Length: 232
Image 1 (spheres, rainbow, N blue to C red):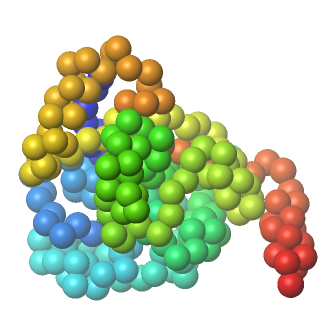
Image 2 (cartoon, rainbow, N blue to C red; image 1 turned 90 degrees about the vertical axis):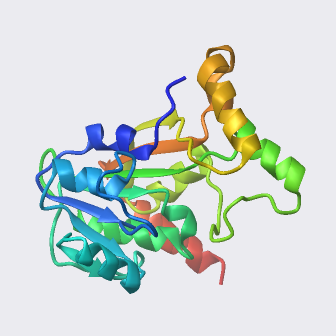
């Protein structure tokens, strides 16, 4: 099993030159770290635009010399620009209203043909690691206290459909933090590294990766509006 962080699996899918990274800031950004997503995006696409809710972290990036940065909410941002690729790595599960983010992202996607694409990663709840954590730590079934939701392929497909988006490609990937301080976690990563070929992909992979494009069908947004109205 190939063990690497999101950056090495997302960047090859990105098409420029106009790139937007939503949720770009990190608590400890390191320009020399090949696993830091924003740093790798800027390395390959120098004019990459970054958006993050945390203004203090945005200032931290500016102090390191990074440009084109905006402190804004992922659910409401409006940059007045279109992008060839929008990237949101492990961000959507932190939001209060993920559908609002998808609407904002779609608004910023380049129009025409071939049009822009939105690349999203989010934790996969049915991996061995995530299921084991939920079982052992129950009722604390999620390791990150800032997460508001879990997605599976089916629920995510329905969510993007309601925002007039299509899933052009999706895959399960392994995105393990080899520098994690937990001995159990590091032992698990080592096990997957050497014996992952024995385990089905849907159990050993801990992250879902989606590539979204504008929907080729109409009516999805109307469906969502009608469904919400019916609940009142």
